[in-house]
Image (tube, rainbow, N blue to C red; front, side, top):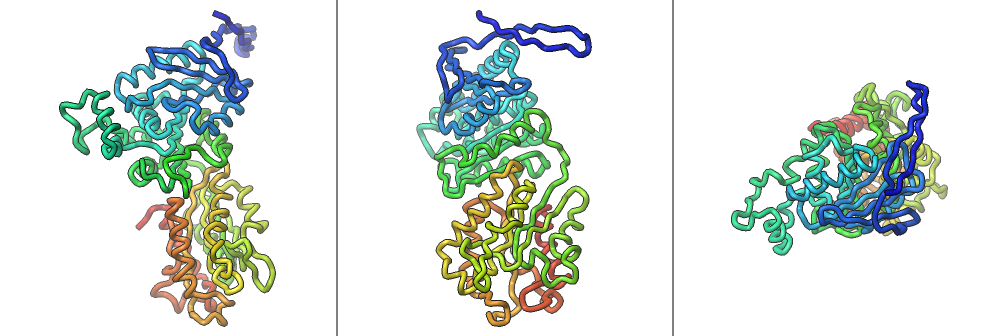
Length: 472
């Protein structure tokens, strides 16, 4: 066996230490510019891609299924210095024999080839089921989970007789098929193990996936992680079905994965909250926007563990062609938007839509959803992979457009609100209903017919606070 020598200076002993590490064996080829080795272990195909310049500690990504399918994330990570590994357990549904075989593969990679003990498991579809089961059985070996359109609940495949029968055969359950709720090895029933071990997890989902719907699979993981305060990032491809997997901007995941494998994701970080919006966000109408705007009030409510940034711009619109008195006011083109993105927030609160209802702006109503999606995408692919919330526009005091700077409350109710709700659903983003924020306190909440008083800003902040802290 050929050997390569890695030299390391021992600072403590002050001597030169030589460590012999085996070079990978097998059929050698190229994969996206990197050396690739294919071999067999326990009768299963194995592949290892070696980066030209490995990162310190030799971090690696392990796919248990579908090597080279939708590989953009792997390609970016290989270029960054990650090894990419594959060990074929594609059609074994996480059965014990496959988990044991995977442990042999893991020990070969770690103990023989010197890869990092904490691996990134990348599971696409049924590969995510295996990844989750491994994380639940060997949680100490997992640095990060990438679960892409994940099969989390094994009973999802009951709708497909061929897959269900294959699962029963592989698990030797054909004589006594498990009933829903009784199969204790179901990955969906054991998510708490992953959360308690604080395994950083990235969820990638298709908003239109009918094979493994978000609500029955990835959403379970997200909800359990939030229950434990465990690190989880969720990105939904709004128009994506079960395919394609991956991301339009795979480089967005790199920093989070690096932080995960090197243990740099703090358990209690200072959470940065970016408030995106128009004049109400900016604080117009309050006695002192610096201290009385709803972002400022939200800061006081959330406390020292949070840093709230006010990135409001008066007159701004979600529409790219939005104007005010003939001047362009598309929020996405503002300096505030650029600064908010550069700030790399952990949470983004978007409150736009009111100014879009003006006659000169709403003539472009057929572009509203795409333009709003562009604002979401500007933030969702930041290195921080922020959680995004969308606000429904605050209610005007009167319906007379001449008294509220041309804003059309009827258009907001009948057209803009349903459009925002659809955008939120497609992206599986939480909406915050600010249209009812002042209800019962209208006389104290308006400084004019549209902007809030200090009390109105408090009521808006309270609505957002309850959404962020999951208080009912």
